[in-house]
Image 1 (cartoon, rainbow, N blue to C red):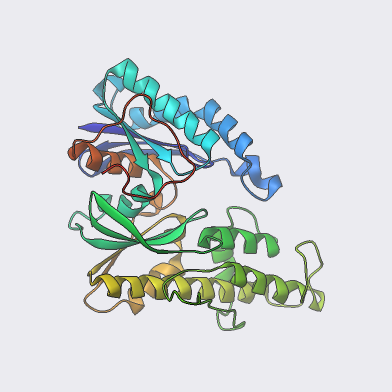
Image 2: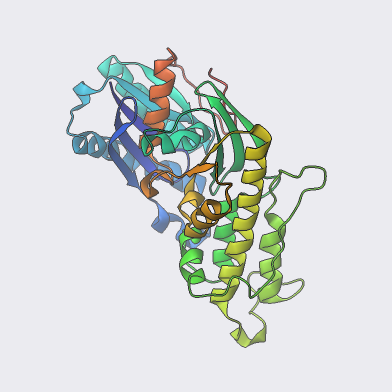
Length: 343
């Protein structure tokens, strides 16, 4: 089966084609960084308008680069939750139109489930059960993936997502967006032990994530107590900004690694899978590999499958279709929704 996956959950217009069950044939993404840069974050209305302008061409390019025509497709998979509602509507409308025109099945995909399973495309020997860490700009949580139809949350952030924290610290450091890669590049030349930023623990829940205090600690270090983003840095900008970036990155990674390995121990699995945009972080990859127990295998998706993309939607769609699950043409969108609702 050839499955087209479409993702417009936030600000990337993405489409990819999969030859079931796991072979990625194409993966096209049109970013919107330039459209949102002046606002310090994603503007929902701008994002949805851009999706409307780009989705047709991105789909055409994905099909062409897979060496296929639209008539060769056997099914359409599309993100319908969670995400920005206006953005999701664009992708779901495009998917419905194609499904009707081509008379092929439609399947709605949970965006986070797709991040949980993205690494399946790069690791032929990877199979269920496994624990999945998903860390991105909008989500940070660990999931128990007992099987294709049994994905449930183990723990999650109580405030900011890890990727959101990276983006906000990038603003404090006068770095461009997307903030994660910019902070990591600067951190490469810094000392991760220069500043002892906090590793937050949530009272009563040893597995939960919290990043708002870390972001605030960086702000106070740069601006002083009570500081604001627009205030000038103290010490006449004499501090080593690369070391601030490195120390922040290390603190964030320490929390991600600690909670993930704790959750893995609770479930007793031997496979830890990582997904989401933060999965591309080199420090996270190195530290998880170094700190995981010898019997545990840590699996990352390729860099192209870390950020939001259509190929992972097609892959998750293939799993749902194999289980006999399709969606009606009145498929709705939702800004929220726990994984596992369809199975």
